[in-house]
Image (cartoon, rainbow, N blue to C red):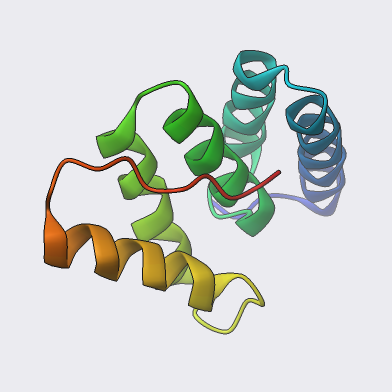
Length: 105
């Protein structure tokens, strides 16, 4: 099921609110808004990146990497795709248990 234009607009509003919360250090609330956004529009790029970034900061590395993988798969030409892909490659190559840097702030 594709999101309606109204849902896409709401998803964009949630993404912007989540980004503002992330910048102010309210990571858990930003994560919750990103997840609300993804329930409305599961492939919304800003919400995928925001969710991944906030999950990194909340210590949920595997879930963050899954969001990042979905983002790169669905949005390979997005301006942040290269940065996200580098995170995935670095994490996959080293597999050192290091926490990837957050994006989406």
